[in-house]
Image 1 (cartoon, rainbow, N blue to C red):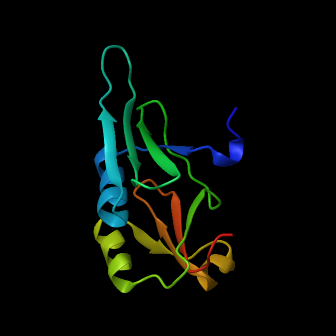
Image 2: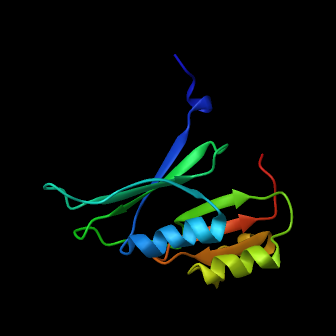
Length: 131
């Protein structure tokens, strides 16, 4: 049996606009679109899977007209970059539909940059390392 500490992680997020959400992650963060399944044949849901080739996690975006994204100030995805967040990366994320915002917790403003994605979920690019 494989240990949970070696497991691949999937994060699922609802979206109201699949194209905008994909653009944010693919154009802004250079993730790969690994697959997209339009809703059909009795299902209202549309899915998209995004990730990096060597990543230990991937993102599943789900669009369902019956589910409205309802992010809170603590719905964060934090990417630990172990270095500065370059201005070109910030500009690329903003061009892809991200909005730079102040974090609820000032720790993230002291140690990174926070963005709101097109659905209002937060992404923090941390200058810290993990662990």
